[in-house]
Length: 73
Figure 1 (cartoon, rainbow, N blue to C red):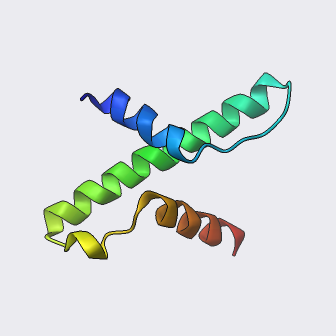
Figure 2: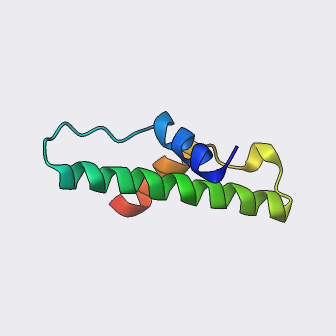
């Protein structure tokens, strides 16, 4: 599986849903989802390279919640 397929699959799990007709808002939410998916993939790869146990690595939803908490604080 290529990187694009994996990224699309990760984005589809927890998509930010906004009901709007404005294409700019939809595009912004799509880019936000893409950035979160790619950053989690990089985090996951980095944790594997460091030898962190699999159970100690954050899941994708947990990662998204931590990022949201950082932005809100």
